[in-house]
Length: 162
Image 1 (cartoon, rainbow, N blue to C red):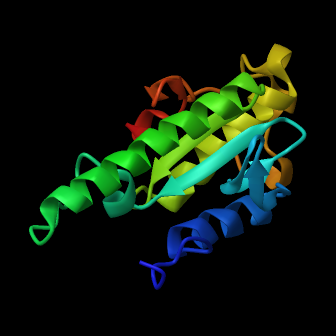
Image 2 (cartoon, rainbow, N blue to C red):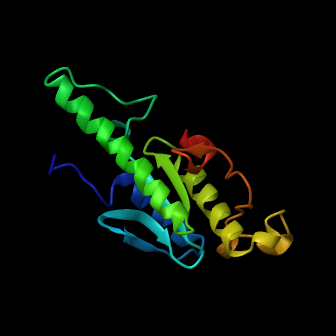
Image 3 (spheres, rainbow, N blue to C red):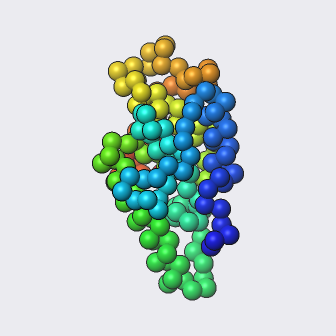
């Protein structure tokens, strides 16, 4: 398991490049308050938006997760523990006033970046979240507020985040 990339995965880097090109600045691998061993993949500390790009296998994607047959009980406990830890992380961040966005690794990076941009704009300017012209994303990315409605793990997440 130590050989599995836990940060700077291909989906993370793709989303980060799009956000950076659109003018967004963020912090990488910021520690979760109260949980020093947990990190936020992409953090926007000012507006308090936390973005996680979860691997389908490790985080239990309902569409793509597979269940190993060898040592199946151990793997089930391990993967269930990962999902429980994700929910706990979501709860801790939400209680600290953060908006938590979780995406699966198979989601389109451009769509993810647009939804992240919308959440950042909404968090920075809640009064303008209705779609005011000056609520456009920096750099003309065309992201609009909204689209951050459904829940995943009981915390605000994205519609595609299941």
